[in-house]
Amino acid sequence: MRDISEHTAGEDLIIKTSVRLMVPFIQVFGLYVIVHGHYSPGGGFQGGVILGASFILLALAFGMKTSQEYMTIHVNAVFNNLGPAIFIGVGVLCALFGGLFLDYSALDKLIPLGPVEWRSFGIFLIEVGVGVAVMSIMVLLYWNLSSGGAMDEGL
Amino acid sequence: MKSLALLATLVTGALLLYGTKDFPAWGDPQAPASTYLSPVYIEKAVEQTHVPNIVTAVLGDYRGYDTMFETVVIYCAGMAVVSVLWRRKEE
Image (cartoon, rainbow over all chains, first blue to last red; front, side, top):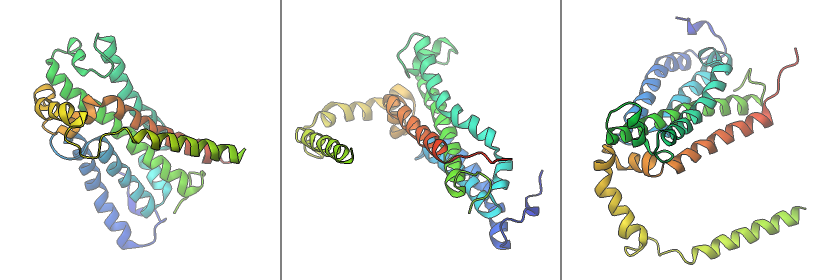
């Protein structure tokens, strides 16, 4: 595991230490919000924003370069496109298996779980797509806006 | 050109406001949405989707198309910022 403390962009020890302690918990909480959207308030948008905020916090405390070590620009670009692609791909897959667009019960022909269970699981799949898209695009917006497009040093 | 854009905006806004005149009153129990759509969601959502959270069921299943384009809106925002701001370093 990389030693995060050797980076010097943020000078304040209290900020750096507290961010280092908080980021893993924020990310676990973000994943929880995404996967628990079926049972409690939450879902892809909210969980994606929480996950994105953890990377933005990392960039604020340790500098943009450090956050780009944990999510590189290329991975971010893949995630940007992967999120909507998961969502639309699930919808198209439903249509290919004989249902309507985004009618998840048609996927029962792919893996027989039962049409009702597939509607539940299909919602989960699109929530993951939304979460991936929102997370990576929030980080991308922060990187671009705070560095004026240079993507190297921000706030 | 600017005055033309302003005119187009005002005309579109006026048309949209005119369109709201035909909407049912806010919270009207006799409105079509309250008489058959909401009761169907509340009564059938758990049975049809096995999702205890009705908000998620409506968002992800019944209104999946809307959610899809919400995601696309976020995607477009990201791509617009990238295309306007991102510049490569000259090395």
